[in-house]
Length: 312
Image (cartoon, rainbow, N blue to C red; front, top):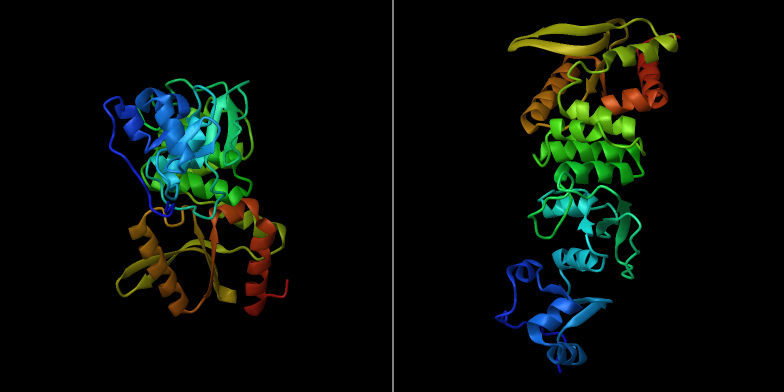
């Protein structure tokens, strides 16, 4: 038999809508009820169907698609398991973060057994009610706000946690208000402060960017006091510079929410180009770098000031 050819069959009368929505991935019990146990055994024996892990059957013999792989992970878990984190977000249409560990994430009830399936990232939770899990979505998964907070808390690099929160809001999967409401009852886990900070940034709470933090970094190092929110007049109108040391020909821009809105981002790029054309050396920092990597920020500022004649 040619095993490279994918064999599929029509849905039998007993095939429910939920099973259709499961993308040709079913539990062994579902398959036995829908087709009869002898038929299932025969399909597996002839390699027309696959059993990727105990208790789960894929009803074709072709490559397992990514969406089917997520369903395999979910059905391999104990009762009341749900998709979570980045896996749940992808089911809701989230794009990006392809370089992140691709194993499907599932959340299982606290105290439940670990699935025998090795191709799954398992987390346990006591909170899997309707506030956290959408009761009608198939495959069953956490709501986007919960999914985003989970994935951010599970992320090891802090920058990844921040980027994920901003991206989820940018793509319209969760509102900042939803995230803030969830954070009010969220346990203080990994990156909790950063997640809250990033959520407030996404809400526009830091349109007053952390220029004050930046100035304090420079002041502690003995740098001359800069000018803030400098207005430069251009032929096509006024242009603002966040920070400037005019005597040393250095300007600094601080971006709070990079790429959050494409039109704003394009405008920021054009504004930065105008600053460079006008003469000063322009340094651009994210608000994250100012808040969490002050030594790296100061190192670059110091070198730029020295190029401009500062002897401090």
